[in-house]
Image (cartoon, rainbow, N blue to C red; front, side, top):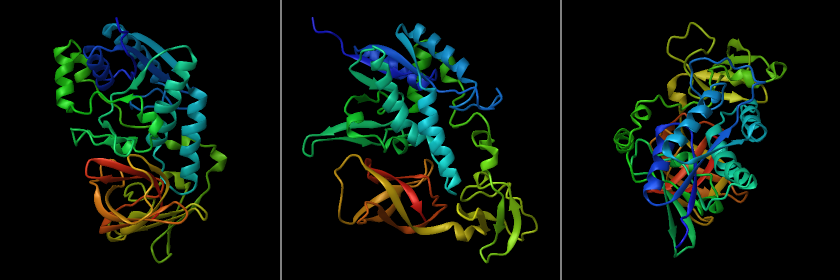
Length: 364
């Protein structure tokens, strides 16, 4: 008798990862659960009600994941990656903010930790499996004509998570399974209720990186420098206590008063620590440069091409012309000006449902 293929599922304790494991069991796979432990209790985050991937609430989450795997009837293993998470994600987060850019830690975590070191460290610990799976909403296929694995949008456009997955490598895609790619969120919740996991269908989900609104807890306080807040003409409107408190498009908590119209953060200068604010019209831009390009579903393109680019998760992909530059970066020109193109954030290029490549917005 042919042995069952073994799938390790990244279990978070939520409905998506649980139903991914259940669907794989129903499809005849042998399933085991992996949960990564990343919390570092040397960081001063209080155990408050706010949900976040990184925080002291992880202790309860690990217990919930263990109980969930017991209910599913599958093995459960905790893979401890605290040091690796600090080196790869937290250091990236802090260094990006210090440059006056806005980091997206989920992108780095997915590429380096969740789909990188988690399965690697599990196998090093003697846990054997053939495939790795998660509860992400996206599709993977293989194109025989070009010999590449391809990532595509999920069926549920409102839940599609391809934006966060565009930085994976071919070798990572080669043994990945996304059981929820062809399902809607409502279908998954209905499956949970039908299968005796009704408590998961109503469980609050965390979309935040930190279990606090105060990102300064990750920084050495001596590294934070005060700076000026100026308008587009350079007139000083106030002072701030650190550029880590600002992001492009921010409207609230600017530390200025007396403007006749709402002001937004227009620019952040990491060298001078100067924050420029202005009215909303100055947030619209048509151009940006993308760096750190990951060619995903296709081989590297060397000529200009048309695409649709998404500049943040909740952004509707917008038509653009992409021109490869000699240094490997991409020049992006949108057909229509886009609101709040933010350096440091991911930019993902689509051809319909196909993810062509992903990069990081360098300048806008």
